[in-house]
Image (cartoon, rainbow, N blue to C red):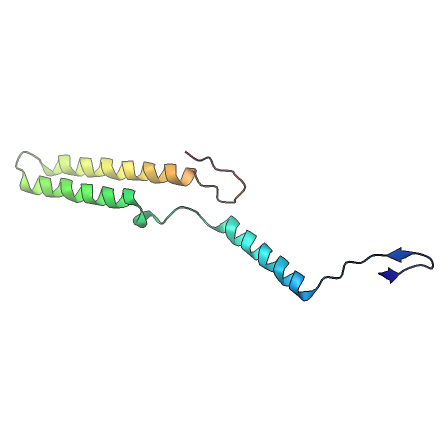
Length: 106
């Protein structure tokens, strides 16, 4: 408590160093949460691994099989790449980047 004008008393909240550190830590944690992305890196996902294995399989089949030409193989690899990009877009669309519930979970 401190005394201001004669006859008045004002209450001032004294902030200790521990309280400031705790508040600073909470603010720092909030900023880190808001700036992080919850999805994995693209190359660490099962979609990427499945797409890569499928693309290698298509290209090997085109190399081995006589009826399966290179143009057809590369078209299928392109379709696989497009499918992978769409799956990553859906995964990223379901993540709220700022922790405020802006994204929708699918």
